[in-house]
Length: 391
Image (tube, rainbow, N blue to C red):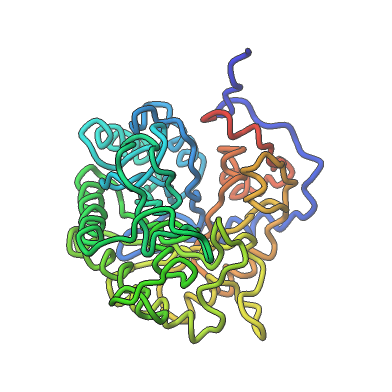
């Protein structure tokens, strides 16, 4: 088999799929504005969205991973949010090729990733992750560990397949997130993102479909934020006051695409207020298509409502630069390119502060540079074959 093409030096072919070409000067002016996250100055409004890649044998990110992220920073991405990386709890993850954020060798690898991104001119935060009941029992790297979750279930109406977490379990996971965040600051990262989205552990506490607890961690929406708020508070206490904490959340779940944590702006405020009070500096509002309104009667998307209700900086995400659902993209489907006029309009109106780009950046490490330079005719479609290498 031929080796993968080095896209860092080979420009992609021009695409026939680009349908909208916004003004180059307007795009550059809007996207090039710096933004502050609790004192961290990000040079522009473009973030790389976290995407699991499975190229870290033994949970150790190697030089290829460092180069993968550094290429995108060198090509204009202001903030790298790494793929999800497991905190130091035996039940946190599965697969031995997904990076871990604990252990001497693993942290040494991550330190080199941060160093490479900084050398390329970018900022970088790790996404700290515990997958909860998504984990299949018996999976490496800690095959003997049980799968744990709020109530031992993976989705609404499902049978119990794991263990409901004890108070000791809860305390251990809170500590694991705090220790990972402290390690991130110690080895040179610029902040952390806590993965509270997509049906993983923190989100399983937020969602009534998987949280059936009758103690202080279950019940109404505010009570269901208790575990997440404890994690945020512990992380806040473990790092410097100016070390940014980003919290990623979503309405949808990988096990229930139509799930919703909040049906109204009032419910969304009830969800977000305890997290902001605990120490979140910025939110990352994950949607499948960023341009869809979140609630009836307003054009604001989830990120827009989050900023309006909390006053915090917010990152939007969801099929940016592509016309196709990202879930299908990770199931092997391609997607044509999509113009960004609407995105620029929303940024200019201050609906949100940053935009996270996923598959478009996975496909083309130079996507940000091309957009910032107004080279929209060079933007190509997403090909799921890009998942096969760290190009």
